[in-house]
Length: 333
Image (tube, rainbow, N blue to C red; front, side):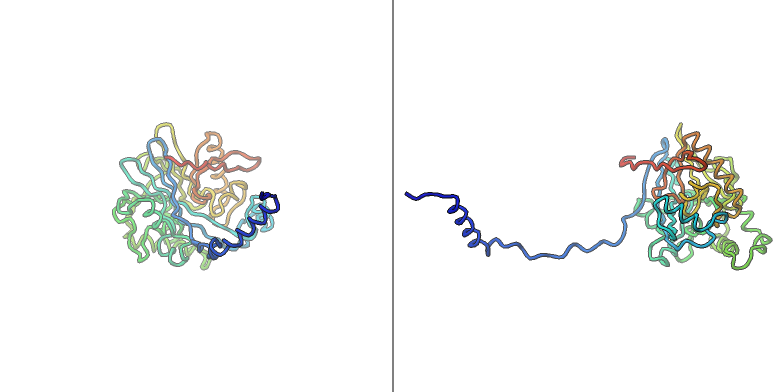
């Protein structure tokens, strides 16, 4: 009688595995899938009452932190604040986010980003607004109204296509009356020191609006300028800088534009700092504190042009400054 032993079973199993090895060998290794190398289209929708808002990214740009970025704070203090906020020292990354407002009867764009020409120049880093509009299913020719907050290039250059034609050919263009008066005044332009950057802003604003035939409708603050959209004066960043409140029923959101500009979270936390892009630092600070105190008290939702995408947050008091509380991503509208 054949005896079955543990050693025999193991020996037989090993022999069988060796015999079968050629037929069950692992397939040859293959290379990993190549990296995609780019982000998906960037847009995010939410509701304000019955109004649908679409935040549409224009991209983000990273540059070395310049000397004098904050006029009334040393660069070391700025770097320390950036490190405390888990940002890389000596690097400035500014995001840009215009919005589209569908009121049900009107399709309204608030600010237009850098534009397709800048998209080509930066190899897609910024100037994404128009391509992301298309990805979001929004036809530029369906836009009824474009509202501009102020005349810096990241807000107005996208009014033009890459070949300097009107990008929103069928839309009425609304601009702040105070802003128009300042930038279109020859005496103001003559006072801008050559090479200061301010002179370039004058030339660029006139270039953009001249390409549009200077066909604009000027608006004043404190008034409803489109269904559910009210203009709110917020000067300092520029003389006529204007924010907008979108409201429907009991719901509302403050579209703050550049109340905090560039690396916005830095100035949220340090509202007394005067950024190099704020034309009147003291007035910009007063505006920032007034609007953020109001937003914190009212628990008002804020859409910030330079907040991290999708640029939607609440603000609350935090010592001498404020803190952003980003709104959680909602997979439904």
